[in-house]
Amino acid sequence: MSEPLDPRLTPARPHVADFRLRDRVTAARYVAGTPLRVTAPSAPLRREPDPGAGLDTEALLGDAVDLYEAAEGFAFVQLARDGYVGYLPADSLGPADPEPTHRVTALRTFLYPEPDLKRPVLGHLSLGARLVATGESGAYLETRGGYVFARHCASVESREPDYVATAMRLAGTPYLWGGRTSLGLDCSGLVQLCLDMAGLPCPRDADMQERALGQALPLDLAHLRRGDLVFWRGHVGLMRDPETLIHANGHHMAVAAEPLAEAVARIEAHSFGAVTGIRRL
Image (cartoon, rainbow, N blue to C red):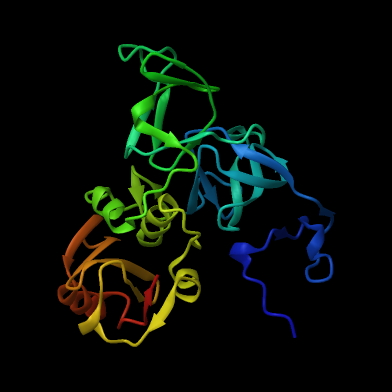
């Protein structure tokens, strides 16, 4: 028997589905996805085509998607990065080509209409956003959407292998359910963004990460290492060192580092129960 389909990762709705799912789901029509790319600085992906629907995740500038349907201002898509499915604003998408050449390595930076820091900005870009550089002008990269300070970017092939250091750079970032930009992060969004900067594929949600990442370890909190991932039901954090957890959480409403023992006691008493897993990359 086939594994049940995870609706978070299944490009299917009653009115349209990926043609490859024809034998597994019922839909009014089956189509091939059209490759596109996110052209907005970031875009909210929601479960329903409604601006009031909850935020499931965010796509960043340069993220590749497959489009299955667009109607009434929303696009039903699947993100190439992690397979997540949902609705993006249709005006946040554009052609898939050319491929991005650079990505933002500063926590955040600005997009300018001209290579001049005194000009009113067009928008902001988050750590991890990917862009297409078409030229240089002094200290700025010229992109299809404007100018970005070059030292805030690096080649799209660059890596920041110390994902714990990246998490510490993000300390103080406000907590945002569904967030995965440096303006707001949830627990699994923090882990995904940090691993992405290190060049490591990572699913979106904590339960997916607990199943997929690294090697499972015994539930022994006394022998943890820097970089280990600690999971609860619906929550995840990174070990900064053997005694300190860094995580995006609703208690601090921010990315915060704290003694693991304190986090474990509070979480068990008030929110997600006991630790369910430890993974080592």
